[in-house]
Length: 354
Image (cartoon, rainbow, N blue to C red):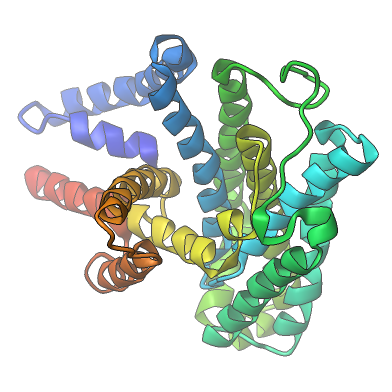
């Protein structure tokens, strides 16, 4: 979908339809190579701070893409901060206390997130707890995980946060620690591409049609032979696994985690907001949402910091703004920025060809 969007932007309407078709086909094949080339050379031509922002965008894009896997089918979760926390803390705790490499710890964290998702989601789906009731259950999960982390302060550092042990001079492939941002950029770039590939595979699979049917009418889907609980469980666990991967990568890059940094209602609301803003039903929508929210976060941080120097404390203002903007986007731009642009461009294309 992201490629088609770029094609629509560059497509000229003042040429012959046949020529336009050929041009569109050529651009469809060329644009992915151009984007791929730019992503590969980016760390070599980008200054350190913009490169840091780019890495953060890729990490959050992975998390947002993971959430959209289930969110697009009406499974609204307010608990993905819990899965991020599980990914980060399991990886870091295994490394600090057992010396287990993150290359092993991350898969272990992903499996833990999948088990947690199963334990929470299975009863919900089995007893048809859906809609806002399901959202409330996941919200409770997020808060419970955060409280467990805070209560286990002897091991997790509690509300003060937790820092993974550095290996040697800070550069170790075994510990997945790199002193330079360029190396870690390619790690998160690979994870982001993996998330997009999984999104695309789900979109082209029979599971997508089953989940579309379930989101419309569960009883009718069950009568048609679709395993409702199993289908919803699969997509929920897959979403949790990818979210845990994002949390683990965040931990390895920032080398610091805290219950409020990657968990709790604030992060869960941010995830929902970003996906809705970017476009819930498009592959590149969550990435667009990550770009928008990260820029907003930087603006809020600088603004709130400047206000604090003047003696004005507006703690929690960013979360309030996220909530307000989420409501506005749901009302006026339900398909998100990218979704609305694609619809408008497609509508203009149809008018030109008619």
